Image (tube, rainbow, N blue to C red; front, top):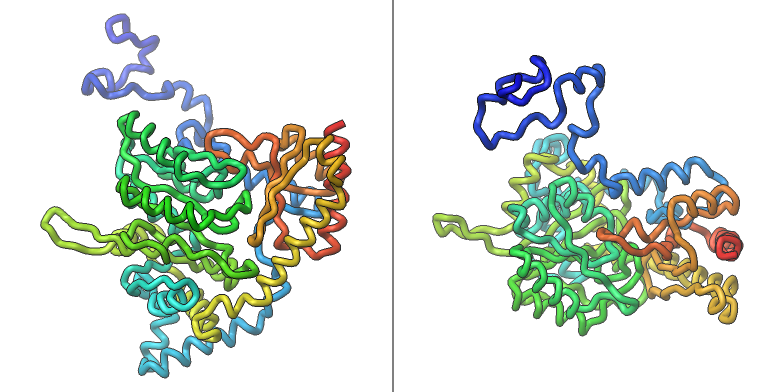
Length: 465
């Protein structure tokens, strides 16, 4: 025991005569035994102890604990537009489409009951919709149908980040889905902070230089350019063009997430993918807002060329499909069929499907901004140090408050004032947003917004005092 450096016979084992660089067990055998039959959390994947995986659970817990509180937290669509019986009509519409295209009864049956192709069976319809709605022209083969946009993010990060020297950059504050996916894959995220005016290409250029100075290779930059979650900001057209030029010059791919465009009023700026002439953009799409979230249908447009060691050329979409085959195997054919039926019912135009919903969400944002103005008149706003942005669409806006907007403040807000919001600190991968809150307007009636804003104003004033 003296020679081996062990304190007891129980700690001596094969590792003592193994390779010199083999690490010793992290936990002594005696400690494992003392833990009983359960698992030690310290020996599970490190992401399970990461706060990013606990944030939304805490928010859900608060919501359930205070059911009478008015909640500005959930970023889900308003379900007053959904009718249960429509599901069957959309399914029938897709089956008719298959039959009109010459599919036999056996082929129609297989389209619903079998696994189907891993890359998806409605890619042609998605490509048609992207062309009509977004002026994005891509071949169906460059599309992978995913289980929501979250899987599309996971596949893209896994494919593009091959080792610890590869860098994934994100516009910050950012949607927690991308940071969560990165954490599950042990990918380090580098935040590129937005300012009050939103994304600044010069800051990204500086971040790229800093990553290379650290010996890392920047591979991709994730951003929501339109009505971002959580800030509500929209990237100007000039910044979009600068970003694409920067990506071309720096050999960088852009992961573009675009869930809120078709559910926002007014004319939208072109997507990064529509402006992309060098195949620098991997377009991540979701039908959760434009169709319905229960479908769990998303997609990735990955038309970048990939060359193997033998000189053969394929598409990045093919590589994403390989990964998907080992994750979800395929996206539910039933979900794809219903989503396809909805697209067919509107000739592929989700903009037509969402004319009423975009108006509804636009009105909700307008009422929220009006109620903020009423609850915090200019003089009082300046005295308290309260300010907010004014998004033209989407579900979210950000409010700066004169106190630490953490979980303790959120609990007091829900318990004593009956109003729930989301701490913006949840969305800063490398810290920040301590004095900001996110408000979601999508799931509330105008009266609920008015009542909730009155409660929020009382909480802010009391908390400040």
